[in-house]
Image 1: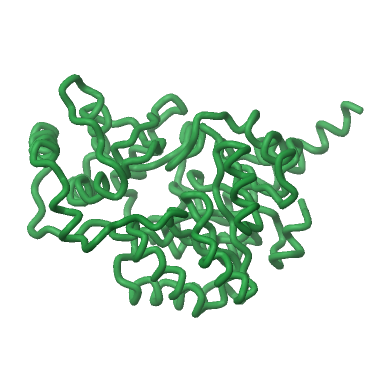
Image 2 (image 1 turned 30 degrees about the vertical axis):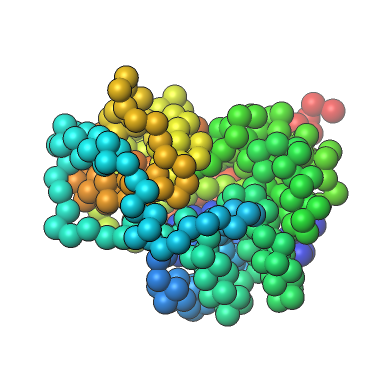
Amino acid sequence: MRTALCERFGIEYPIFGFTPSEHVAAAISRAGGLGVLGCVRFNDPGELDAALTWMDEHTDGRPYGVDVVMPAKIPTEGTAVDLDALIPAEHREFVERTLTELGVPPLDSHGTGVLGWLHSVARSHVDVALQHPIRLIANALGSPPVDVIELAHEHDIPVAALAGKAEHARRHVANGVDIVVAQGYEAGGHTGEIASMVLVPEIVDAVDVPVLAAGGIGTGRQLAAALALGASGGWLGSCWLTTAEYSEGLPVSATQQALLAASSSDTVRSRIYTGKPARLLKTRWTEAWAQPGAPAPLPMPLQNLLVADAHQRITLSGDPTVVSMPVGQIVGRMNEIRPVAAVMADLLREFDDTLTRLDKLR
């Protein structure tokens, strides 16, 4: 399985693995793909620098990339305290009441939330990443500002951007983006309303840069289908959430328990995670926000600041029925904890089997 992107990035397989875990990202790169570390969870630039330094030391010289969350238009955001003051009291009351009803205990102390959703913090992520031997900067919110794209190009780093429509892809390329990630409706996290089977060929036909297919890809058959649709590789995220490296050798977490038990029907597309539509695991927490009388989610980044403490409380509660986790519809096939290398081996084996089977149809 080789495409032009393999030569471009110095990887064995055109498999780009997005993950918030540096342990998983490094394992993906060691297995022949390109591990892409999600930076949004790092509030402190020093923490991101430490994570990337760890990856430098544990990727065996293999290439890796980073993923930031940066809107193309610079918002007026002020400080975290200023933003916090914009959150309505009724929203806070709803969150606290819901957590109590769900039996989620309080925290001993309160943090500042995940500030990586803020534009200024995302820019600091880029600055830190460029001090390391990264091979790709991806942006989860489409095109980053043009000056950020130009800065990456000055360092000979290509830029990828996610797109949910062909018109978005064309705009990304016009801004200087090098690779478009066509992310279909099935995907976890921020996603549009067009399914991958329709979206991928639309975007492939709309732009003259390589396209990575995302959304609903977790097997070799699905990866083969993505390449058949014209993609130059796959962008996989959800399937790494139940890998052994994600839990860093610790016992299976409540989040992983919930993922292992879920079917492909157990996700919901909602704005309650960040303020923008994102596909999440369906739990008692997501259902509470869908009940009559629940407040409408706030715009990004206010919604994330509103629920940041709640997410920490939910995680620490250890209750699989209330976890809050972005995941795609491929979750129905994530039925066991396995090392990244095993997941990759199965992808490659099934890909080869699929091509062999299709060849017999000629």
